[in-house]
Length: 520
Image (cartoon, rainbow, N blue to C red; front, side, top):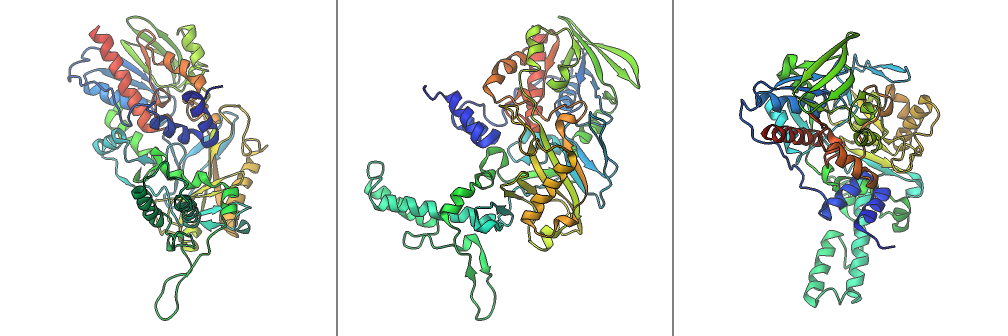
């Protein structure tokens, strides 16, 4: 069987997850450039006399309303929740987390601590979202996505004791540089490199791996057992970790984390929580956004769209010239409509990711005792990462995320180790256990847990529709087509699925299709 590009990308996805597959697709030229927008330049009176109903007040819906209003359309946003933002949601003191099974959690964290339950960072090349923040007056700060002081742990590495990321990264680089240097010196690459290139390569490898005469013997880049100081005492470097243990530990998720295009520095976050962005849109849009208005039926036609919804339990209808539908496809699949059979099938054609997050309030032991300021620690465990807050560094209390991953494999549909845990308490215990492995004795200081399971969040029923699977191609293409005067939008109709930038770009694309229909 030949290894086609599709099969190759599928295998990369199975090995490295979405980010690895996405980066591979970019390298192969299978995706448009990051930041590519189809937003047309429309005059201020282009949509005069035309009404648009927008279903969903997440980022896609808010961006659609914001831009359509600029072009003279009369817009109404119907949002099922009592707040804007959809998955762009920050949980803080006073928040209630309700699941579809009736479970209710109340948050009473102190000192302004919050959890970004959905998106939690903005890459510097997500320029449209950053520009909207500037337009709306949403202040941003740098989000520390990677810290070399954060930890990595695997039972087969360093007798199971956590080590700093700088050790894992730079010892691995050093060994690789030494091996390649030996290959060059043994003339194993003569067919690929000229004599001049070989000399240049050896010089590069000595710098890349901090080699000593072609051998890796440790580096200041990996840190110290005895740090640098004053007086006669000299610093002592960490002894290099064993190459065999590094390979067996396979901590590549953490080692390559910042290499994925959407996780490269510099990254940003709104000061005070990600929901500052949707609230900024909502403030600008004012009464255009109607809350507590769940949609019950969508009837689309060639000249208009009628939407049935409830407000305070009272059935109501709204008819408009166009509809931009940004509701999650998992919710659309349960909503009465007159869409084509192919479109209805597409609503269940892309699996909804079952992402979760677990967060705790705690004294900032990671800063005081470990000098970790932001970033993520990685470990080989049921809960495989611990994410430290960037906001309010050096304060007494913070919100630490101990667990952020999926509860179900998108390809096989089988539960992950975390998803297979039988109870919420078992999942909280696994979260605490990860902190204990990395920071012995400190799990006892974790309090007031909040557990987010996106498959159980009303009006979401999943985090995002996974559109990078081969099986998603047909439903993606189908949902990209207008259904009469209804157009779909959401991050799942972009090549930045799961990102707010993707949601904004999909809204731009919906506006482009409205303009095309009007121009005939």
